[in-house]
Length: 259
Image (cartoon, rainbow, N blue to C red; front, side):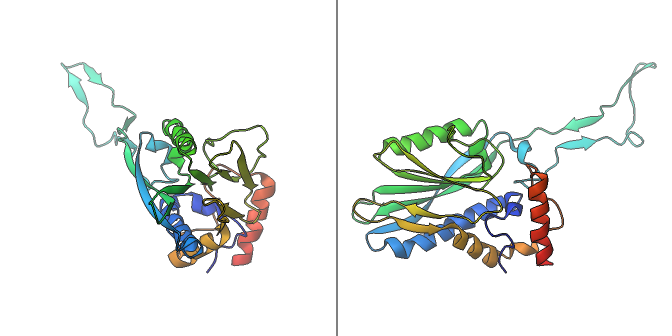
């Protein structure tokens, strides 16, 4: 079964996202490999990021964890000093949140002859789009560009702050950016939940032509292989942020057709 949505499925932005992210990276590598062989190869690399504010993703990206522990005042004994003063029991006890270690996949296009990194394809994670991870990621993307590496950045998450901001960028739910090595231009593809996913160019070394990345094909493959429909309740609202009333009505129409 394919996703009922013509483009990005917003229900995949929730707690399923880590699985979606990993599978999307693997499928993108799989789709590009035959196009770029035998001169280039597509490889998956992992880099580790410490998410020091995981509480902002509880129930969205991360499985629910215990953050608040309420006291049962009927069962817990009072603590007294002497015979008069009784300590008031706390309303809640807030558990300390430890940093979560995230392994984030990146697709690397390398030439076979020298194993040189030619193109990096980043699928953004929530930790890339909010502090404290936002600034290190912004530095990383500029380091890649300064090193002469093409960077294709795919943002399929509506929440968070985008690493690249420009007044000419249109408002959209999702965004793909391409920074070609040796240029100062950024190509942008803006698309919303009710629009098709784009087919993106993946640059190589000139004069070799760009490879083609069909995002819809990649999404359809991981959706079918992973049976995501078994984990999604389309009768509920998509994960935050909330859509406009017009888009919510459109989403409801899409969902009704799948029943």
